[in-house]
Picture (cartoon, rainbow, N blue to C red):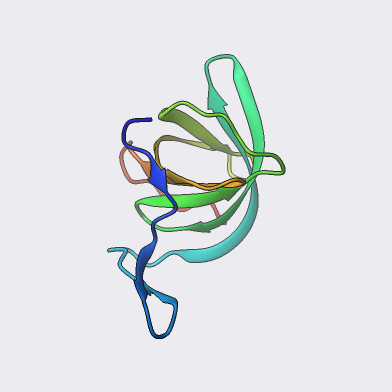
Length: 106
């Protein structure tokens, strides 16, 4: 798949085996139910963190998703356009592609 790579949230330090944060915006931990919307389909997920630029979502089963979709935040009624940046078995990292809006964690 074009533009999608394995989970990549930093670089590994061989001696320590830890990731070094390389995001431009720090993500805040949050556990909030979200719906991923594409075509006529929706998937339930749990947003695990968010920043001004994107978020991480976890699913109960490995998701099959297109490169572009929307995330709906039921708690606030907000809907954001996104693109898939990375994926692992049950998680995805997305970048928001629409105009910046207030965070959906009110």
